[in-house]
Length: 121
Image (tube, rainbow, N blue to C red; front, side):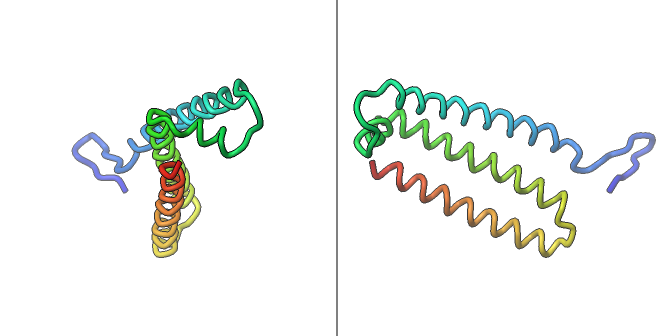
């Protein structure tokens, strides 16, 4: 919807696109760097890859904190993508609202499970 104020046109919601695009790129780069870090630790480790190795990788406090930030980044990254898809392709407001609520509940549950598994190590 647009509103005219004199000769200037105000388009509501148009400024969100760049912020969403940039946030998805930043979170994707952050998650990719984290993946490279974890793979490097696996590649340069000695012995078989098992629970002890995984627990050793994720047991230091700095790694738990970094993993927590990656989980939050992934939560936001997925939310922006799903929200944009719902807004673009689901036209009835009621259906879109239910899908948004379901997506939020699902993302919070998944991130809660990931954080619980992380802090048990």
